[in-house]
Length: 216
Image 1: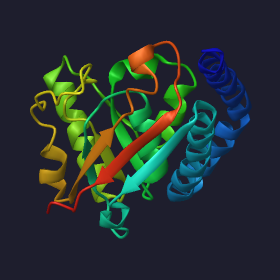
Image 2: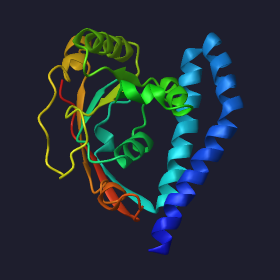
Image 3: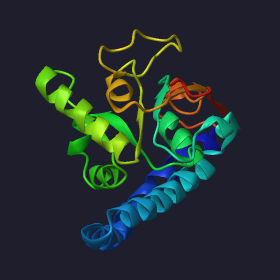
Image 4: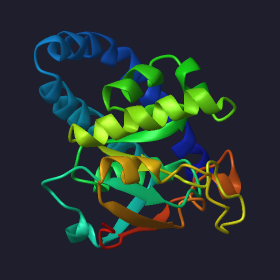
């Protein structure tokens, strides 16, 4: 029990240190984006992946990945996965070799520092209450895919609290349809057992992420 609590404290302390130290780094990334946006994207991928790997290490999480060879290396894809918990994002981001941004709820824009790095890795912020604004986000995702940056979407729209798949939100596949990008199905298992199932504690464990063959 003591180790479980210490993991949570370790994650909190690491995130505080990371966000403080990343302020000057973010400024450098901002300057870089003015001259070479692709270089900024690549460097942000390295920085965020490193931070996520440290979080996973502190949490005692091991990853079993399957089907990574199914991910095309020469084109952007729409990754479509089930959503069990917070660790879905960490596990998938460090496993996917491509630059990839996530479709997140617009409320994430209110989180200081985190919102800056989410923007840096090309995350999209969806207003689920405003159809017009939601359509703009989908169109922005289409352009992002066409420009070579993959998108990861959880089509259920929210986290499943019992592990059962929820109905897909209307329009979740429009990005792939309009951009003509391959769809990569993603199955994540046991991520909720790390954190959500015993909130606010963090329990070590092994999670599985499996990538299906591209749907074109």
